[in-house]
Image 1 (spheres, rainbow, N blue to C red):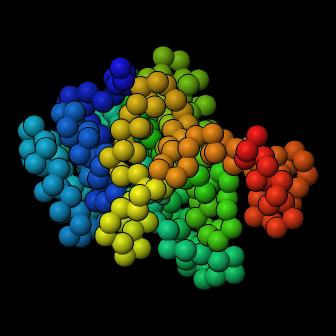
Image 2 (cartoon, rainbow, N blue to C red; image 1 turned 180 degrees about the vertical axis):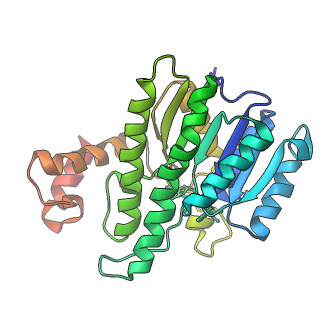
Length: 284
Ligand SMILES: NC(=O)c1ccc[n+]([C@@H]2O[C@H](COP(=O)([O-])OP(=O)(O)OC[C@H]3O[C@@H](n4cnc5c(N)ncnc54)[C@H](O)[C@@H]3O)[C@@H](O)[C@H]2O)c1
């Protein structure tokens, strides 16, 4: 039986960034289903309004429990205004999900503005979100969670989208440090967790497709796995999908770490010189 972490409790308060779509929207639906108050955070627009209307249909107390607050997570002043608005409305926060993210694509020598945008949304949005909300969450003393959405691309850093990889590697490093800090707080009741989705069919990965590819998970599957993993006390929520199982992920992660240990070139997994060795490593 799944243990549900005590932060996921009726009338507790959740704040979710990137809540208008995909994994964030699925989390909002799930948390509202628990009877929690949910703050939907996303860029201003029709999608946020539609998400608000959607989540209201599953909320036990309707408008009293579900609010949408347009916020650009790449802007510190907007995150600070968000925190003030949430505290004024609900008093405290029990679940903070720093989940907003973009993947416009990038190149090492590509546009400066693109690099800054990806880093500011994906990394600084998570760092600042955790810093702006974290101390208040520690102070109220009730069981609480900060869940930051990373990526396997921040761990194995495949070629093709360096800005995204850098941003997600930063989310991993930050969230590890955050959890270390939180667990050393005497009587602390907040823990941080790194959500590492697999291939999930969302706005980010649809690329014009309207049907979920067989190998992808849904946002709902991802959120169910997240809740189950947190219930078990996992920090690293390493999600499989229909194409990649956990043993394969473990091998890929180990191979990447062993580039350093074995003094191989970086990203050797994608070097033709190492492809046979990697295939053998995967099988053993
Ligand atoms: N879908 C996958 O396969 C996958 C895999 C690994 C990691 N992720 C990560 O999961 C998270 C959620 O992505 P998703 O797949 O649900 O994509 P999505 O595009 O469906 O949802 C992301 C949401 O973030 C919002 N957003 C973007 N910039 C923002 C900003 N500056 N301020 C506030 N909101 C902003 C978008 O408007 C969107 O609603 C992201 O961090 C993404 O990098 C997704």
